Image (cartoon, rainbow, N blue to C red; front, side, top):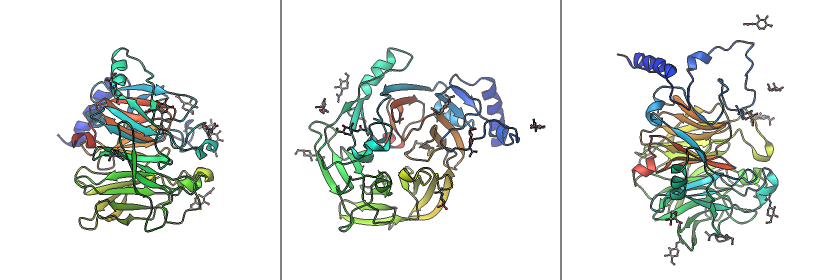
Length: 393
Ligand SMILES: *[C@@H]1O[C@H](CO)[C@@H](O)[C@H](O)[C@H]1NC(C)=O
Ligand SMILES: *[C@@H]1O[C@H](CO)[C@@H](O)[C@H](O)[C@H]1NC(C)=O
Ligand SMILES: *[C@@H]1O[C@H](CO)[C@@H](O)[C@H](O)[C@H]1NC(C)=O
Ligand SMILES: *[C@@H]1O[C@H](CO)[C@@H](O)[C@H](O)[C@H]1NC(C)=O
Ligand SMILES: *[C@@H]1O[C@H](CO)[C@@H](O)[C@H](O)[C@H]1NC(C)=O
Ligand SMILES: *[C@@H]1O[C@H](CO)[C@@H](O)[C@H](O)[C@H]1NC(C)=O
Ligand SMILES: *[C@@H]1O[C@H](CO)[C@@H](O)[C@H](O)[C@H]1NC(C)=O
Ligand SMILES: *[C@@H]1O[C@H](CO)[C@@H](O)[C@H](O)[C@H]1NC(C)=O
């Protein structure tokens, strides 16, 4: 039987008996909507929800997504604070402690006025989350705990790890305090060590996200000018580009450029392919410009120089902008976009979405499932897929 025929049979079966919480959206049903369609989306902020189903739920665009979700996925809120953007960026899962660390990126009220405050880094105890979820079928609200990090840590915007047992954060800097890469002890006293804060004497613009190339200790990070566009950093004095830092030699170099706002970064498990998201559509104080990229680019990692070669469009996101990016062990690409999390397979086929109807800026795989940072709330999505980083630990 052809792959197409198998797909068609699966699709029919899926329509007949979608598991609860799963909505099958056959792209063929929406190829032509007609001029009288009443649900045109003229704003990229609004997610695609043609069935008007109440969020949260899972959209399946290709039956293969069921291999990732498993038969009975759940989406449950685990923490909430409607008045405060506490969960925005930099999720790092530490399996040994079963903790997720994350930052609010200088949040406060839902306005730019609060962005001059330093970011608040918090942690949530996933053991407490698991225990609470086991006691109910609904949502829970676990108290997150704020860390009190040194003043070296200004505007945490991205993170990965554990790196040699530590959290590895990138900071965007604040006013004249420089953006940096900083190691943070995930246990008391949460002491910090800055390992990079300049490019041969020049300050970076505002570091945004970081990943380690699998199988190495080498760090790759993005440096858009969001600090300037958000009003908390001086005018950018470098292109918005992607850097490579080898902490054993101290060498810093550029591996990719030609972005509007390079943002999330990820590698395939074999380290041969890199992904960089461009959130050009969101211009901070410049507002939204829907003619600019909401695009994920794919590159080959050059084996010797580790420069990013052969840039090509991987996908363009139909809503919001692709921010945080994580891969599962099968190479599926999970990205925080408008309306929730979008999932593409390694061929760039949109296979599904976790539709919350709100922005999720970041996400991280944990033993409890996929944890989503949705600004004023956190969710855990219990699916069968396992995160790439967990698998290699
Ligand atoms: C769209 O609406 C107009 C005005 O009501 C109607 O004349 C036209 O037939 C409709 N078109 C379709 C394809 O339904
Ligand atoms: C966009 O859609 C909304 C709701 O349908 C409508 O109120 C608004 O006028 C539209 N804007 C443009 C520029 O078409
Ligand atoms: C989705 O969010 C928008 C904007 O907040 C809201 O107007 C709309 O009612 C929501 N849709 C659903 C189905 O909850
Ligand atoms: C920023 O911090 C100041 C001082 O702690 C506080 O008064 C203010 O409310 C904060 N701003 C926001 C938007 O949270
Ligand atoms: C997390 O919660 C569990 C269960 O109460 C507790 O045993 C553990 O010490 C907590 N972890 C941390 C780091 O506080
Ligand atoms: C950080 O300081 C606050 C306020 O003093 C305190 O409530 C909190 O427990 C501290 N966090 C940690 C992890 O010690
Ligand atoms: C924290 O302090 C301990 C004890 O001095 C040191 O061994 C460790 O390297 C420090 N970690 C960081 C991330 O600064
Ligand atoms: C949007 O971006 C395009 C491409 O850079 C630019 O030509 C246009 O002026 C921008 N529009 C607005 C409203 O800023």
